[in-house]
Image 1: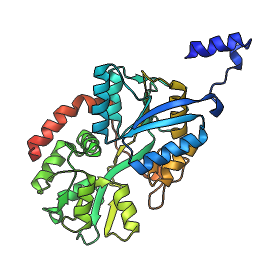
Image 2 (image 1 turned 90 degrees about the horizontal axis):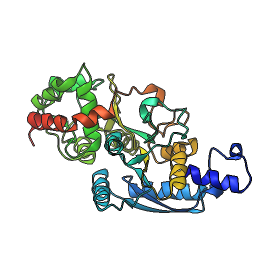
Image 3 (image 1 turned 180 degrees about the horizontal axis):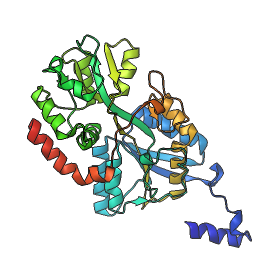
Image 4 (image 1 turned 30 degrees about the horizontal axis):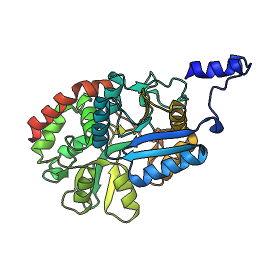
Length: 331
């Protein structure tokens, strides 16, 4: 692509210093193919906002959960016909697996200067677009107000804990990796949860329903479910524990086989711009950009402690972690 642009400039009699470092909207056109795990409504809003900014681009998109998106994409890799230009999926660990296989294009010119470097791939292969944290949820009728993960091991919580399974939920997988890597918690914490009678199953929605309905009183869940529903009168509270929270960051990446890399780069630029981050906030998610205000009910980014997380290590340890989990809780 750089060679093509350079040739065009020389033919036009321009010096290379006249080339723009960022493509303008009128320079980006054609079809952009997006595969995403965003909810349908969010995906449509994202696509509509991008196309309003880049009117010469037509976005074709496919939406499913990250597991199904990856199954479709892996089948396309196997057939030698990957379709998407760009991916917008749940987690960095999946992106790490694609990067390790050489499936992602490095976009080193993307402006990530405002962001926490831990949220971005240091080689520019993927870019976090929001923070969907996992912390503690409790029912307001609970006898104890937890402030740390250790509180869930107290007698008041015995038999009253619900949590999503990392065998089902990507957010729960990352939460498990973050907590078990923390020296103050480790696998002893999960063994303690098992002794408390916790029975991890399903996803975040089922966990939220169990606690909001009073069947259970404490658990782990992604932030936006209780924060949004509390404002609608649900008897729940969300706690950012003192040890910190894990986060799914919904990263975006360009495939190395992208047919329209210019439009793909423009899509990345849009999502990590303040405009794109404001859109994430308006959708009800915590933006990853520190200058963009969070939605109602969320603390500001500088008030949230993120637990340490190494996506490459999480990828390498993923199978062992899940086998350890099954040993503790059963399949």
